[in-house]
Length: 200
Length: 200
Image (tube, rainbow over the protein chains, first blue to last red):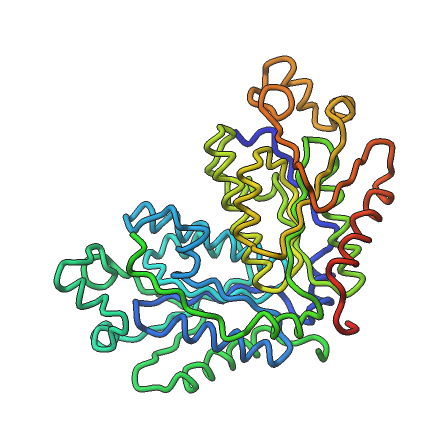
């Protein structure tokens, strides 16, 4: 089906975009169980980086599932397609020159590895590594309770697997930490990995 | 499937992003037959706007079909899903605060209208309105020839419909014009519609 396609190159090169934005484009991929705080961390990091002159965008699980991936469910195949599409979109944002922060449970290692391959080098896997018991005790949306009651099936950590990263580029355990403390750890990591090349 | 989703709001507001980038986020949606010059125009416009301080990104038909939409073909249903996904991704780039330029044949009016609805106000439909006979005479990839020979089926303009915009926000006819001339028309349109709010 694809043999009549011929990709048109951008006239802007990655160095052009880096000069424009003052930093390289990268993907910071947050993975972890439900209720670890991925979305809150992602949104806080987007703001903290923007204040420091970075150009950023968060792709968030629940938001993307209401738009781009609204035609996908939670079967293993649909979870894989969900993460495949997000990996491709994150790679587009990275190619555009932005820091793309993704906040998805992304439970399967193979799916995350495929997302990494879309983006090549500038992919930073960040494990939000809070224990299941703590996530379940938080349960801000009541989802764990519904999963235990069998109302929600295929729920990650309860009735569906979570394959933790074996060698994450960065890890944050939000247990017993304030959002500000967890944010600080991610922020320090990004500021070191993606230096600003010029004042904003 | 979506009743356990709760969209997490960004902490950055659209005015925050506008202040950061110096302009509003918008979608400039190029539609037209194959070989009208959509991709060349889009890439040239991306560069011309970036030089002027805008932050931009082109979503191009052939590029996206090799990544995000690599699992779609050219049936009417797949064309619709192709444009649905692109509309959603363009809306994400617009939400991020960028000027997102899309270069897709996007032959169905209903599909383009749905893309417009994803983006609400900042959607500018731009018809690259070059006549079929001229596109067929150009035929840079030999696709029209293959379509006439029946090697390629469901080819827009030959064996599949193209529903031209009835009231496009902008129109460019590339027939008998240099790329620079066609580019100028689009550039003038964007500079007027999306003013820069601060020097870059």
